[in-house]
Image 1 (tube, rainbow, N blue to C red):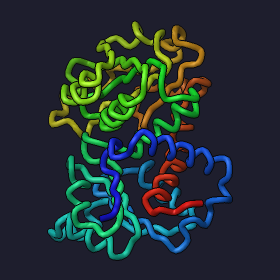
Image 2: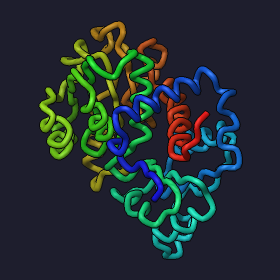
Image 3: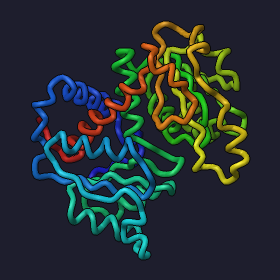
Image 4: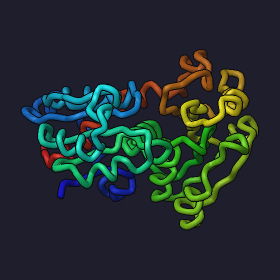
Length: 306
């Protein structure tokens, strides 16, 4: 059976550390890797819209000397004719060496993996998991702070539906001496199952608040998220909550000088454009890091050693 990455906890801490080391070597020595995946093909099966994740996977495979096939919306695949996701994946696995799959339904990549003859990477499933974004976040934190332990991180915004938040909390809970500060409206708090599974079961301290400005001075990392319109059943609720937190230069005056501001993107208006000029803004570096960590993961799953 091929190795699949459906959840970030499918990777051990040692494997994550090795992926980060490989990604950092790719950053320093890109030419060394430029033909590593020659004659290999990546299929991108995106049943849900995406810009960064899909293009990042494609850019990663091309930078490794491989090629890409796939689709960017469900309507352009045979699922529009009634074909099951399992049959679609089984078919595509006959053409490609590895698959990156995004789907709006939680658990779809796991189910699809049962039909695939090649490795599947979960590129996001509903509000559940987004392991390669988590690896991107971990690489960014490591490059910003030089470590993956011993800091205070604040998650701000939509913590209920934010799959990037769920995955990163799960990942960081395996590293030591991290304090979690959960900042959200009452309606968008981190789900109880995530707190039970990742924080409480491991005896990890965390605090919950609705007030960003009161806690920003204590943060080493601030992970901002947008309120996700596509996850709401009621537009009235979305409109009421969408502007709950807007990070501005004024709100950053009390923050640490070495704070790192992360955001999985896309942003709407939760980070003012003026913050982009702040040296503490790390989210554009985060975008670049996504390509390198996906390159490292593709190499690992294809068992290619450079």
